[in-house]
Image 1 (cartoon, rainbow, N blue to C red):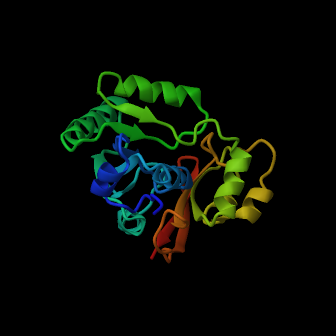
Image 2 (cartoon, one colour; image 1 turned 60 degrees about the vertical axis):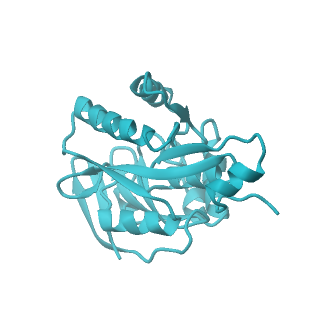
Image 3 (tube, rainbow, N blue to C red; image 1 turned 135 degrees about the vertical axis):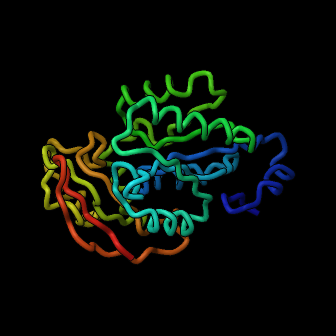
Length: 239
């Protein structure tokens, strides 16, 4: 009988012999990179996803940076079959406030047997070093399941294997504002102009995943409107 990520914790513990199950929390933005990280982590029999955690602005009750409605975030986590933990932060949010909120959440998670925290970062060394400093002394091991993947190949693998997303945020100084609300699919990846990372890892764009192998069922969403503020174009998604 093959081992898969849907098997209960006890089955793994009783039947994989010396294999030690690792309880992992995954940083969840609602976008493609964190979604793909979930997909890859679930393919590892020693990994148990203890939950997803997302920073959410208290006002206007949307995902930080991506500006996705929390109602869609909750529907997405339910489709992924994972517990969702939201961490409220103000807008704007000073780094110290953010770091204290994360530290408090992680301390509570340790009481639930969580020993590792995973991120969907791809190649930005400064971001990785920041996370390593942030979690130093926490007792948590950090996982970066997508680290070092060539981003063009990664974007192609995502879309070839059924991931579908909508672009919800565009840095208009780095990418066309018309991308807000566009579909992230294989055709979009193939048309990617030079100078823009195919996964938007430099902050060019952010996405919301509505279909893919990490979701039990697709989410039906539509673009309710597009707005622009602070140098960013936002697509407001609605059920």
